Image (cartoon, rainbow, N blue to C red; front, side):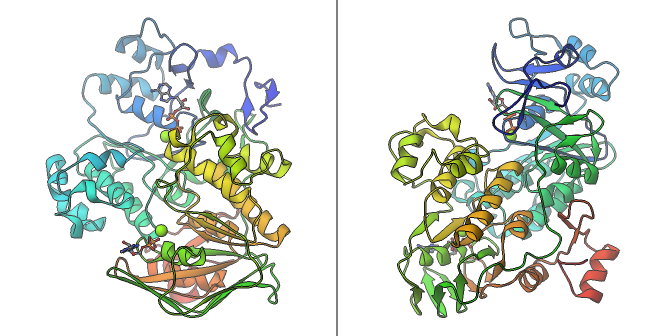
Length: 543
Ligand code: ADP
Ligand code: ADP
Ligand code: MG
Ligand code: MG
């Protein structure tokens, strides 16, 4: 064991049965008498970007709220909440002492982007009006331009897509004149290019005199923004413990390892594995499962054109491209929900299909999760479904909940179990990683890989998390063009060619971490970035 845990948690995390006294003295907040407990806090560093990494439900958002003064920590004293003096005293000897002194005196102005951006769907102002209202630095237009929001300036905020709302929320935080910037999950709903743009703008907030803290599950994005990383581990919904702050590379690698060396704590009993080389295609060329001719489809003002192609048994096709370029339209044609205007899609033999749509809002389901999964043909007692899906996605605790009452993240997890837990020849997964934490993304990627290879099925995955696509895909289709107007899609290409084409469009290069093999974004204009672009002409796979 790790020294503090008494028994192993069945859900692959660690359960601390008797928290040692030493840790109890670090209780920063408790929600209600038997509620979630947060031990310690991430210690922000002035002028540096601090990334926070941890599973869903371990207190990342709670930490941000406390550091932002949105939530006053109660130090576990529910009945008699402490005064600021007690709280400051509690952090004596740590940098948090001065931090909370200043925060409680109103010397630190805070700008906060909450995790959920759908609250903006109630805002009737236009993007321009909304941004000007909060613009304390006089940079609203400039920031809107850099985030690609200018063309939406006169549109009402409530009419925006999820990704557009995310960018407005980030812009509204950035234009504030604050000393503390707290950004909770900025990459959600954004495509790869937008993630990069947004990351670049957020990074600049870390300068002398300011604190920047970011929570994010896209490892490439978190890595790119942060100078430092704090890990939060524990049992989701029960407690979270904040680890010491590390440099960004060491912090993320430690997270991947699941082992905190200096504390001698193993918080996960497996490593998150990544690969060095593009995965070798494991499929046989003669096992074509689905074949399509050149396709075209017009929807309103938008036209999609797709090159002819095919998918084989044992193959995972990753689909990459900006928002509004026709990825979902293509998947819906494969699913038989839309007919192409020109061309054909040939299913070889009688194929059964399992489809996880991007937007789950229209899912109509009555009854409990247990009933829903049973109706969808998921054998919840099978050990594969149990160990590879239900446990890592933490769906067991939702079995008796009503599907229509689930939150967005809970519904996503249930729908992934429903889609992957069902026997089919062809799986279509449209943005499966949205709302998932790093462990859950890894679990989904691993089960997709295993299922596809071992059962000889085939899978299409639309996804913006480059680390996840890198890990799970055998081939890549790249969608390019002018979002909302015109999209063109390549046939499935090998990983190297596909990634090169895609990243050349986006203008970024990746290298590999020598220890964990995870892909890392090169700083634009850095020596390596220029060398890969100009000399090697390799945006991605470099030895
Ligand atoms: P994370 O951001 O890491 O996913 P949160 O900080 O949002 O986690 O929440 C941690 C846990 O605290 C949640 O699992 C939830 O059970 C609990 N929690 C969060 N907010 C409240 C609240 N207002 N009242 C009671 N419990 C809460
Ligand atoms: P992606 O999945 O790549 O984000 P989609 O395939 O969902 O893109 O959409 C591509 C474009 O087609 C978008 O601009 C979208 O607004 C438009 N579109 C999608 N469905 C319809 C429809 N039924 N009528 C009109 N336009 C549509
Ligand atoms: Mg959160
Ligand atoms: Mg889509």
